[in-house]
Length: 155
Image (cartoon, rainbow, N blue to C red; front, side, top):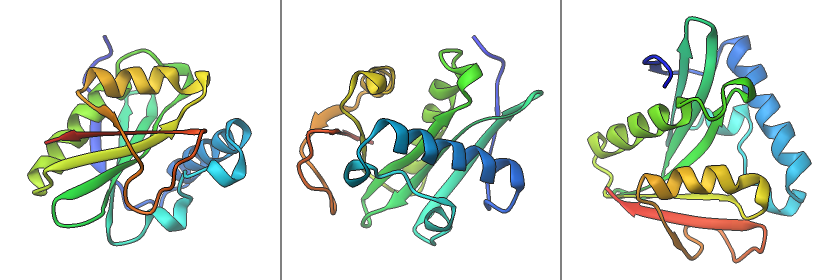
């Protein structure tokens, strides 16, 4: 298990987080057909309805995640990413636990997400299952897509 992370709200102004997110978007583009890619770029993540967190340890930035307000009670989990060299080390679990608690504190009663349906995304889907997310149909502006898996949980 990795040592506790420093998880903070990030204003997305630093070069390290910009590079980290660019790598995320590039990876999603390489794994998902363009019409099925829903990863947000830096400018899209700066919108007022989004709260973004970065996670760091002594070695620097190791993960990130965000929530996007859909309505008064429903939010969407966005931009979950762990530094590739730190995958399967507990970073994503600590970050997701923090984001779920923060979403509850913001008054949301439901948290939903879209992730890939391909084998590459299986570790992410297993993580979400471990935290109580269940498969559901498309929500918000999403449409049925064979490349997408939709999940939700009550908070």
